[in-house]
Structure formats: structure tokens, C-alpha cells
Length: 68
Length: 227
Image (cartoon, rainbow over all chains, first blue to last red):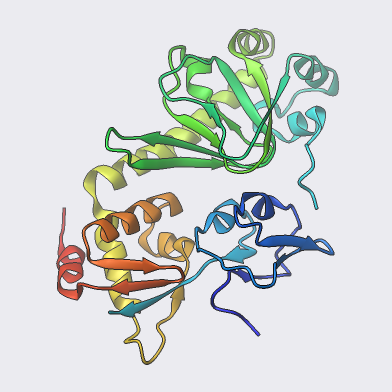
């Protein structure tokens, strides 16, 4: 099930380059079998750096926009 | 995981700067390269310094940015493996127009401006390649200047947020910064700056994966502004 509190991963697009893993200052991402995965329990702070460095748009950080 | 360092020859073969060169010519260029490593967050180049080398990213990601006097940061580019940065002082002389910082552990290959000049003189194909690359960069920067100076993007971003906002009960559509950039016809970096500005002027709040519109009327005013 998708977790809206963590970045979204499109496994088909991921080429396992690992740039997102290196840019995540919380160490919240790992490469497993050549594809990025979220480390269980990580509290992503939505810095969106992983999305910024991913040329394949395999990892994205969507915002929910709500009226306050 | 392909976060390995791209070998020199492989990088040169992939680089648009050196397309059209023979293997022997690429090997000549390869011998001129020097290698440097940086830790995450380390400054590779500081705006205003004299560096005089063209850098190619062999692994990791590099942020190229300018900082204003009040500390605001404008990201000009995120440079990924096989791509280059710091062209301006190499071809034009003088100081670095922007800073470069390692976003991850980074390895770069550098080519000193004197060596680059020798390559340009000896291999006109490289000069043609440089002209094409510079023209492409100029096109990008002209559009960035237009967006920043005429401030049209922030109005478009305000409109997008209003159009896609949910009321809290029904969830709104989820948008990435790249989605918003595509909708507003701009670069992702400009969206980041616009969102920051909207936070600073109190019209929105950003709480992790949520953008909360805290002053709808003010955001409507911004969306309606034409510059």
C-alpha cells in the first residue's frame, strides 16, 4: 500500500543509480535488487532532494494541497 | 547500484563537449583531466573566487547556485553524472559566477582552462560543440531571467495551488514540484523559490507533504496579479 508520508517510487522507472540514496540526509533510502526502496520507519522531512536528482522521475515527493 | 565513479574515457565519450572525437583524441584529453573528491555539503566552488577549471561530474550530484545578500539561494542547476559545470570562467576568464556544492559524496574530473584552450585550438570540433552547449545554456538562462524578473511564475503557482486545493475533507490532487513546473511552464528550481516566497509572505504553510493555504484571499490576489 502506498504511504503518503514517504516519497513515491515507480519501480519500473528506477535504474538503480543510487543518487537519491546518496542525497538523502536521513539515510532513508536503499537500493534493493537494483531498485530504490524506503527504509522502514524513516520519518521523511520532504526535502525533495531525491526527486530533484532523479532524472527518470522514479522517485517523487507529491504535495497534498489543502485549504487551511 | 550504479553510484560508481564513471571512468574518464567513458565520461568523455558520453560528454557532448567531446562528441565527434576519435578514441585517440579522447585519450589525449583524458590525460589532461585531474580528479577531486568532495563530501556531501562541501563547497566545490565559491561564487567570486577564481578557479579556471571545467568540471565533469563522475559520480554524485552537484548544486550550482547563487546566494543573495540576505541569504536567499537561487538554484541555477543540479548537475548530474556525465554533465559539466563552471564553463563561464573557463571560456570567459574571471571569477566564478556561481557557487557549486556537493549534494552527495561527489567525484569530479577537472580540466584546467589552459588545457581546455589547447584542446579547442587543436580540435575545432570541440569548439563547435562548445558553441552548441553555450547556446543551449543561454536559452535556458534567458528563460530563467524572464521568469525571475517579470515574476509571472509566482502568480501561476498561486493559481495552480488554488485550483488543486482540497477542502481538507476531500483530499486534493497531489502535485510534485515537477508537476507544478510543467503546468506553469517553468523549471522545477523556480517552483521551489516561488513556494518559499509564498511561505515567507504568509499565504501558505508547508508541513512535510502538505501545502496548506493559510490566506486564501491573499493567494487569490497574487494569482490575479499581472506583471
